[in-house]
Length: 214
Image (cartoon, rainbow, N blue to C red; front, side, top):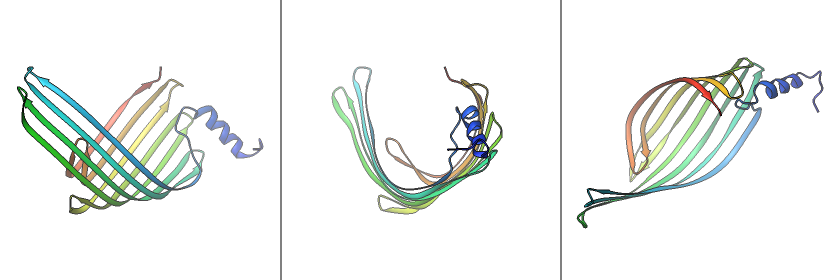
């Protein structure tokens, strides 16, 4: 039971009335051990000029174990700090079959199977600012680094991302949003239909717009 003379009473009222449509604010510590399996795949059959046929089948499987914590600190009504870290063990398998037929005759038959294993550490820090009851500003830095094995080829991998975001509450159906971001990755693999290693990659992004929920 919260007394009306308690500052938490006004904090709760403010969040209910003005932040009902925005991301929730949390307080406390979360400790976790998570085992996350995953499977995805696709099949594409394409006919060209009634005589050529392409068959593309792929399957991705993964198993990720994470152990870590998240800390949520409401500094005051107008700001909040969140941070956390976790250790990760992951194994990902990719299986792809590509066949090309011409006039019913098999021309190419390509099969590829690969396994990626990773052990790393991930950490993040977020500072949220609430200058008024309609505005949220988020500043986030996140990073991950570790050691990986791809088909008996080993190396270090890592990435770091910086993101700034703003959400201005216009109405319960309309918000004004903007983001700025920068990210750098090294030796990371893009796993879609097959593994593709990206030695170095720098990305810059920006967006600004109005979101209307019908």
